[in-house]
Amino acid sequence: MKLSQFNNLMTDEFGEAYAQVISRDMVLSSLGDQTAATALAAGENPKLVWLALCEANGVPKERWAGKPQPKKPKLD
Image 1: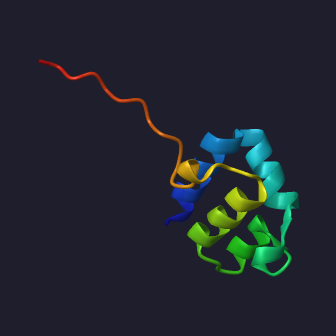
Image 2: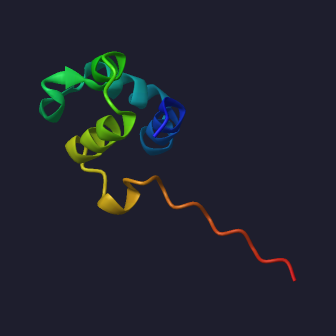
């Protein structure tokens, strides 16, 4: 996962403002008691950071790959 994908998932799931807050302030034991921002700055895989945040925030597993996108209507 690229950092841009991580950022998009964060914004989609938590909203722009809250995503920034939890990334900066939430300490995650599964990341060695680091925040998401600190772990990413240290070179941690964004996917691992995303999954740690999902687990810590109770995001349903079906959204760990992102929120389902609405289906586009078929054009006949």
